[in-house]
Length: 291
Image (cartoon, rainbow, N blue to C red):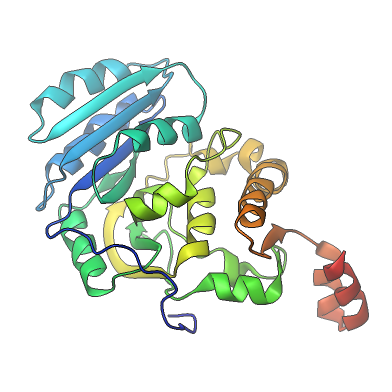
């Protein structure tokens, strides 16, 4: 499935062949999963050039497990255990160390298929110039994280709307795989980082919706990893749900980025407009859209 795709809007420098690849991992109290996550990086058919890990103040045995495993890996590593400041701060720090032209993300409770980097680098070579590359993920329970993946240029549709109403425009907004399915060029990340530290979780929401200011989305339906649905995922709880976190924290951060870069895009929720639209009250809908 694809959105209508205009000519590419970005023109990044051509990646070196082969490009250097940096893997960024953040860790927080997932000691029971982190070793398997790291081993899935070491088992890649195309090894990365470096693995960059930041532990965000774990209180379990994550740090000890990471310390023990990293020296055994067949590529460069860098690790720091920091006080707890949230996932955005951890991602910002790890990305600041990255030396690769390609940055792939992996959460410490997820894992990759052995061909993940090989297949994604092939995708990037075949469809250069995108701002965000992503692949599907298994959900660990026999299903897919996203039954249908979408490629195209959502930014242009967002700009046409101006206000992207999360109550009515899910098909134009909810397009992205979680962090562990994302791969970006460093040149794109440099335009988007840092992620505001208020995003103590879900920094991928900011990265994806801001990066598309500079180019399209290219998605692969190939399942190249597993997103663990273990019941403790941040997005499962009300604290980081739509009402208490997405609307008051994530959306304003994304909107501020778009304002700084001259984009008319704003994300928010207008339930009255959704109700009016369903009933055909176009005048009410338009008035509410204009605020």
